[in-house]
Structure formats: structure tokens, C-alpha cells
Image (tube, rainbow, N blue to C red; front, side, top):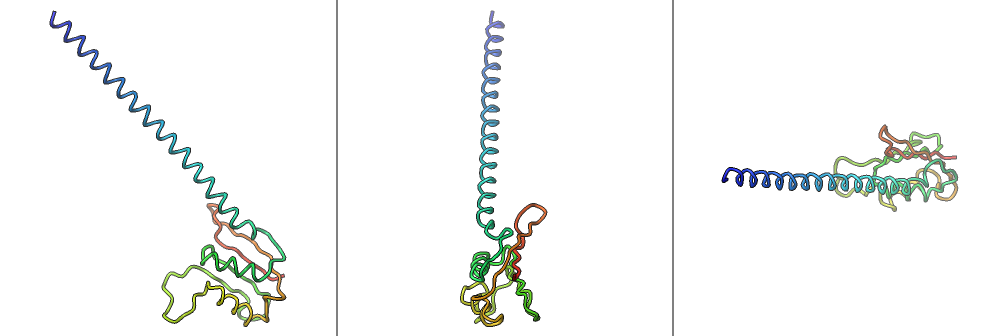
Length: 153
């Protein structure tokens, strides 16, 4: 008689353990699915933010130099900003990209609005008043914006 009761208790314990393990597996799969949904939502939000940030420069024409200065100052060097001034000089192509080393002491920040305004005014014949630019966005293999290129019209 003791054999039957021990067998019944053992089978009940095994069934209870199976139920507990099933619930743990079910909760784990629900948590994984929830994390995947949240990751997809975060990715969609980041794509939308990038689109909103860079869409004003995607194939736009008649941009003022002030628009370029804003884009350069906001980018901080990433993505790389290239400006073709349209002038026949060695400084026809201006490039702003993220620095890998710190600025030398006493050097002006190349992304400050004052520095950018001075560069556009002094070197290129008062571009702030007269020049218009068209823009182009270049994406890398993953679809991320890597270069914003401005050309003088």
C-alpha cells in the first residue's frame, strides 16, 4: 500500500514541476516577444527622428548660407558636411567632420556659429547675402546619413 501512495505523490510532484516549468517557459517567451516589439518601436522612432532631422537637406534647392551654417553647427561633424562654394579657388570644397583629437589650446571651435559666419563672409565674398545652395544626402550601405553635400547654384 505504501508503494502506491509513494507513486502517486511522485507523479503529482512531477506534474506540478512540469506545470511550473511550462509557466516559466511561457513567461520567458512573452518577455522576449515584448522586448522584440519594443525594439522595433525604438528603431522606428529613431528612423523617424533621422528623417525629420535630415529631410530639409534631401534634394532641396535655394538654401541660404544661414541654412548651411545651421546644419554644420548642429551636426558637430557627423554626418560629414561638404560645401562646394562654386568659386575658382583652392578653397572650393569646404569639409566639416568630427575631430578625433582635441582642439589645440586657443583655437576656435570650427562648429561655432561665429566661426562659421566669419568663414562664409570673409573668404567667399559675402556668401551670406548672395549665394544659394542645393543639397544632397549621401547614405552609407546601412542607409544611415554619412555625408550632406551642398553645392552653390
